[in-house]
Image 1 (cartoon, rainbow, N blue to C red):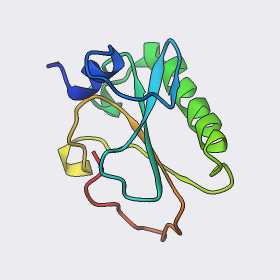
Image 2 (image 1 turned 30 degrees about the horizontal axis):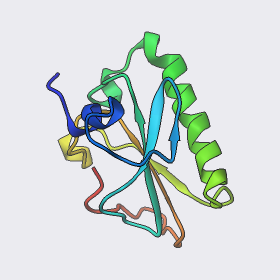
Image 3 (image 1 turned 30 degrees about the vertical axis):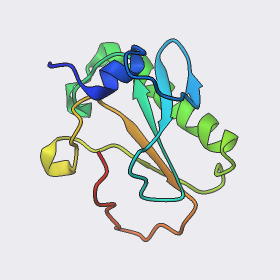
Image 4 (image 1 turned 180 degrees about the vertical axis):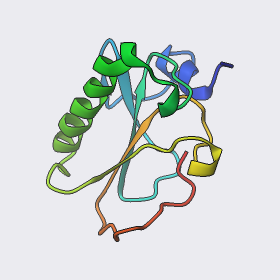
Length: 118
């Protein structure tokens, strides 16, 4: 896998404000927000796409979900948010380093696809 902007961010090579950080992931604001609250949860381990994760990544994937709930609560949107993972180019992924989107602060329509999400 080639290096990505998210790899550089997680390693601190690109200065970025972390809303949350632990030994497994970081959380940053999306630079092209699709909702009033739009943050990205990025694992420090560079997994290109969700389908590239394997059994050894199970604990990390669970951790990312728990972080999503904690961060949403911390941001005051724990009662209503959407959690999105894009997989592959056809799924809208443009940065090939697995990451989760938390979107909140507006009503999310059922079946709505947010355009432009990485």
